[in-house]
Image 1 (cartoon, rainbow, N blue to C red):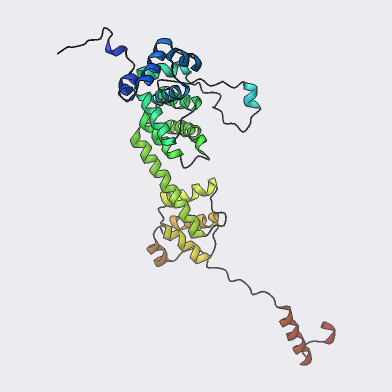
Image 2: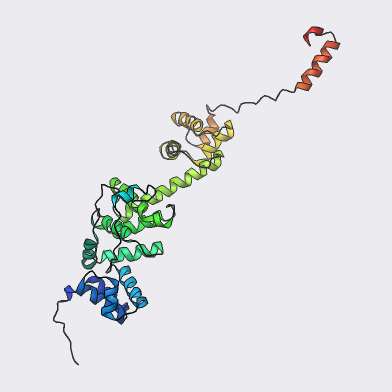
Length: 312
């Protein structure tokens, strides 16, 4: 049996190439070797040197882009162009992002980078732009968030972003907020998401119980709702009890009643109903004045001599 041994050390081969070469066909491998030998290159030059048609070359480029080996350059907008486009989303000016060269370097030596880029594009269902790739790799390499946390944040932001193009930018803001809170591992990230989802569920239930017309809560109202459940320990039925007793759906009013109940130790529905409460009963609305009925009564009194003629 013939045994072959390479004269080059195995650790000189990029990790990405080791992981993906079995899935690559001949033209795709030619593209990878060409890039490793020549570095950055223009597509027309690659097409001419490798004798590949445009479709095959584009397919090979996409294959290595998804693996993190190939980074396609994009024109960098001038500062005056950014200022002239107020609606365009841009990165925070105080943050420094990895360059394309740095990202290429990390992708070759760190197997986490290709995984991050591949899984992120799988979640988004599309190829990411260079700016999006810069953002995610910077969060991982510079901000120190693990790949699983970044992917968890992307999944969390998917239904919350205004559109698919805004997911990565929203994920960056969320990632920085979580880092400030000390949420930097998967266990705490998943627990934090569960807490957020529980709070959102409670807010929706309060909106339904109080029959709020606008269908949403302000920031201050959300703080009050969170206090009702987490600080005072009330259930949704206790909140419903306030509404049924008073007929008022003002969040501020309900908050004042619940705060009073909590101070009196009435924190369960059983205690509230057993001890009574200081929530006022619903006010009786006066019936609207019927002018015709009043006139008839006045005429009747006049005929009976109850009131003088000049009073009419």
